[in-house]
Length: 407
Image (tube, rainbow, N blue to C red; front, side, top):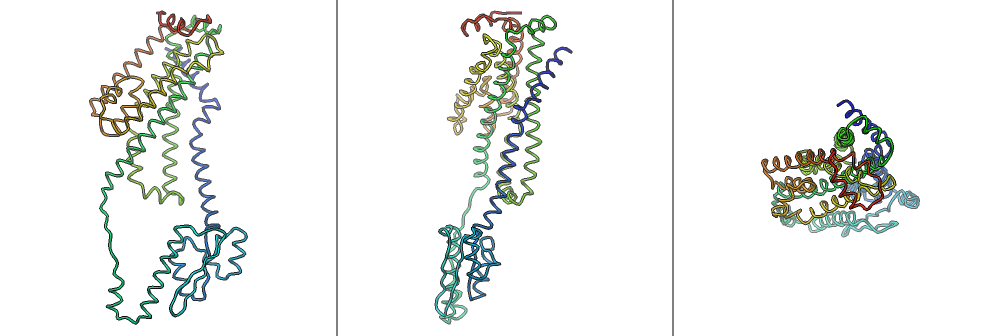
């Protein structure tokens, strides 16, 4: 047992100390940091370049517009000369000149580009309101008449927000889950197959097999890769929690988090559940198969090709989930949710859509666990024969000869 753990920790330490693993783990956090950084820079830049100045001899008219549109106006610019200078330097999008006389309110915009559609709508709304007030004043209507003219139609909406949010959460959870499973499987099947294939036919393997059993060595390799996977998932969970807390308090993202709190909670509930177990077990069974494929290559130079059969199987499982995103009641989807190599995609899909009972999940997990144990035991028995097989025959001949070993 001691030799098993020696192989396990040696494999684990070699992988986590590699630059590829460091970049794999830190990559999403670097992207998050760059996105937030770019957002801050863009927001600060937009504050300057997208703002306009308001110029008017009527202080009350100007103050009313500035008060209603604080986020779009540079209130400290009050004269045309300064506005033109700022605009020419690229620090101002343009300036708006407001005028009013006894009968009419007018506005004229000067800028480097056309007005933004939302800002144009705000200006027109302000002009309409101001003109109405001027018209009422000129008409000298009574208070009752003015109130009657100001009556507005009312539109009321009743939306089942909870249902709409739940449906959107299912769609987002589906895409995050299948893409996450696919990417992690692709990564670790390649790592495992190349890890095994790189030792193919080397003299060191004969020495290793003379000091420990092939089963222990093989399981040590698998456990080592499993520890690497667990480390990555743990880092993602802790780092993701930290990123979420940061987003809750960041001025750039706080309003977004508050507006979509129920949606985010639903998505996190779908991800941080038994779906994580399916992710982990899916990676394990694909890793074992990748190790088998790595042991089947003819020579070390073929290590890069070793993962191709497993990658193709993963690709098939990934793509056939798409047609069942909105059809989880299909008998085909239900059957595949119990089939090893496919259940890591299909059972989470059913769980996200509340289409699987606790009993069905338990049966599916038991089938997956038993398959992992049986596959690991079988490949462990024939592992020595596979690794010491160095003839340059065809893949199918090596495959047939490999499964005939029973050591």
